[in-house]
Image 1 (cartoon, chains in turn cyan, orange):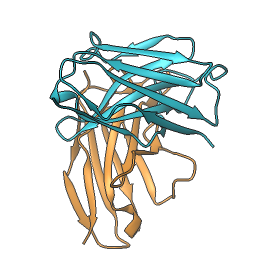
Image 2 (tube, chains in turn orange, yellow; image 1 turned 30 degrees about the vertical axis):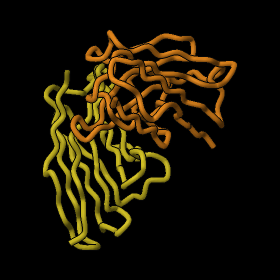
Image 3 (cartoon, rainbow over the protein chains, first blue to last red; image 1 turned 60 degrees about the vertical axis):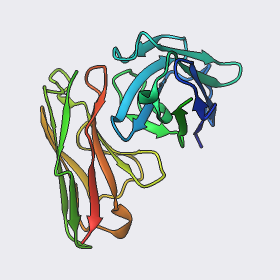
Image 4 (tube, one colour; image 1 turned 90 degrees about the vertical axis):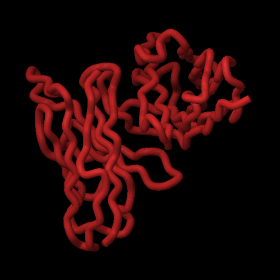
Length: 122
Length: 113
């Protein structure tokens, strides 16, 4: 059974970099031809698509965040990661890692991790 | 960006009755070559992540009860919950995956009357 688990610091200071890792179990990133990604949810902005990564490292980012976002894959650890730089209070949210339903980029989100709450505060 | 809107913001329905949620996109999400609308519906219960219910506007995800149905094409879509059950209390979101950045509606909260 596929499971995704996001982990990382729950508190990040303003102007610093938020780093989260999603550990995948029940599937292999190195052999998967599916897309993976990150979504965040905050009271103010609702659900927001952050970006997508393919196991070969191809990435697609939300233009509103593109200058601050980096996603990567570590197939040896079966993990993919999110880094968001220069954070502000507006980046406070629950961050979900997700798997896409189909083997195409334009696909719904079939599997969601439980989410990791990240608060930006000094 | 494609803007997604939903109506109503919230609704209460008696057990066993029907709930209807509308979703509208600011531009068409229909791929005419495939004749598929790139529209999904999710259910989110308190403290849980969203769960995929419907995709391609009307295809039900595996394991989703058949009282959940989706309809519509182009820019106007509907999620119908027939025979509402207590466990259907949740917030429901629509999402377009036609064009990045993929965007979600603001959600509709469904409760029991």
